[in-house]
Amino acid sequence: MKPLDDTLIPQVAGLSRRNLLSMSVGSALALAMKAGTMGLAHATAFNELEVDDATWRRWLSDKAYRVLRQEETERAFSSPLDKETRTGTYVCAGCFLPLFSSDHKYNSRTGWPSFWQPISDENIGTKRDFKLIWPRTEYHCRRCKGHQGHVFNDGPEPTGQRWCNNGVALEFIPEGQPLPPLRQARS
Ligand SMILES: [Zn+2]
Image (cartoon, rainbow, N blue to C red):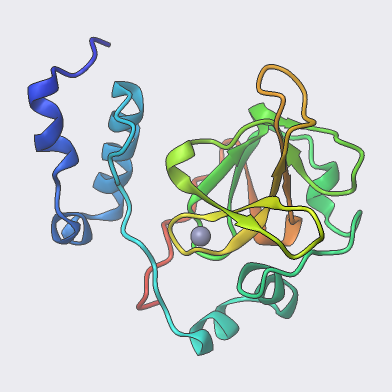
């Protein structure tokens, strides 16, 4: 597909938050896919999800809550997703935004599901984390801000990255099954 003419980008990227909030999930996803194929680096095609702590506690298991909302790390080799090898999509267990694809998964032998790149940079946020002595790069779901894991530079080609994810922070949707609609504040 031909790259977007520069003059068109502000019209597409300039969609206001209100516009996006009023869009159906389907059309927002369609826009995300369209933006992806057009290489629009900064188009935001999903509404951010902000709910109170009580809602997160109601939605999530204790384990998932401690990882997603309190940045804890699950025990190595504790998630069945570490050994998951089927084709499919990994969505955020908090809000169901797609974060990783089986196309980019590999066995890092660390005991945590590992990927050499996310499904889209747009869906991931990062920050520096100084919880250990050395700084690490924490990453999270950009939509609900749920903590997912840390990214390291000892992964395989072609990126050399290791996105080391807590399995409990993801849900695996096998190919052929529909992706769950994005979780909304009133659900
Ligand atoms: Zn999320």
